[in-house]
Image 1 (cartoon, rainbow, N blue to C red):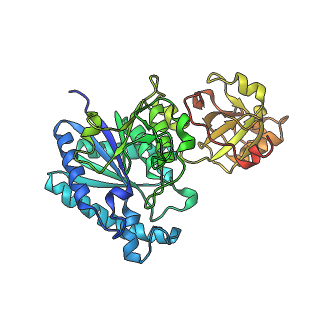
Image 2 (cartoon, rainbow, N blue to C red):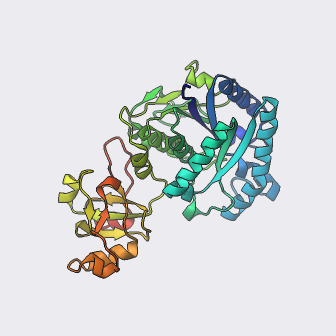
Image 3 (cartoon, helix red, strand yellow):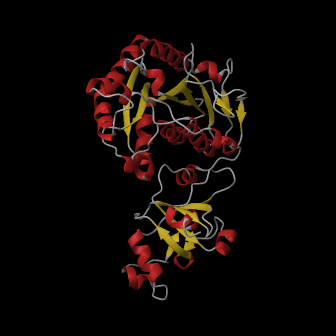
Amino acid sequence: MAKKRNIVVKIGSALLANLELLTPRYGFLQRLLEDVAQLRAEGTNVILCSSGSVALGLRIIGETPESAGVSDKQAAAACGMPLLLNAYKQVGHEFGFEIAQVLLTLGDFEDHRRFLNTRNTVHRLLEANVVPIVNENDTITTEEIRVGDNDRLAAKVAQMVGADDFIILTGVDGLYDRNPDEPGAQFIPEVDDVSQYMDATKGKSTLGTGGMETKLLAANMAQEAGVTTWIAQGEVDHPVSSVLAQTRRSTKILPHPNPLSGWDSWIANRLQMAGSLVISDTLATALSGDRPIRREDVISMTGDFSRGDVLHIYDSKGIERARGLSDFTSEELRVLTSNPDTQAEKLLGYRTKGEVIRSANLVMLENRHLLWDAPEEISGSA
């Protein structure tokens, strides 16, 4: 049996919620889910990553997008999620399919065991012919432990399920070389290197937490996993299939021809920085995936991290060179680096080679990766 095509579709809040009334936009949902039903009939798996729960709940708690604080948005998400899922369910039943809610937090992506468990759940829903609707669990997340935008969350879902295509439906018809409201703005039909356009994408939407910048960050994550990304206007008939058929304008962001393995992609594509290391420039220049990072290589470190967290590796100038899975907690590593002449086994009380990051768990960052700025403790001293 041929493998089904997997598509992840991210839908922005402004498409799902009326900007003034903060109520569901059933007309859009009709067009979207009719299209999903047709794609499913053609043998395509569709996973929806849906914003909208906070926007729909604001009216219930008496707040607006401009006035709502963190606790207001958490309460709004609790009120809005039943409304959003009920709207999806009602319209989905009209077209003969079931939906399922999958609420995720940052830890479900950053912890590899939970990442795999989530993937298994989504695959089981697809096997049962159910459409998963994924969203961040905004009711319980705070600024420190949240993904922060559904664009990158959706990209991680695309990576998770091995998607063929990742479609971001939004309020504009794609990427421009500057704000599309500015005179002379040029539409960009196809992108290979998203870094060229990052400076032109600042700002975010009124209802949502993301703007074009987060969409390009998400597209870069999808590129690494070998997924084609499309950014397109959602307010049209057949909003998904018309993008795939290329019968209307959209921006296509090409996947890398040599994508990372699933393991390397999970390591390299992060949503939050757990901690960082600074290594010598000599080692940074010679560093490759064949050599581990040892305790004697570490010049300094930041963050309070656990064993198994992914660390960002910088040279002395604050340029990110690699990312890798730590074999030690931050407390253990501080002990090891402060006592370089004492055997690691004596310091920690268990047998270890003293390798901070094993070579198998180290991913070099090539030009195709969007690098993260160094933490202030590093950049300030560079």
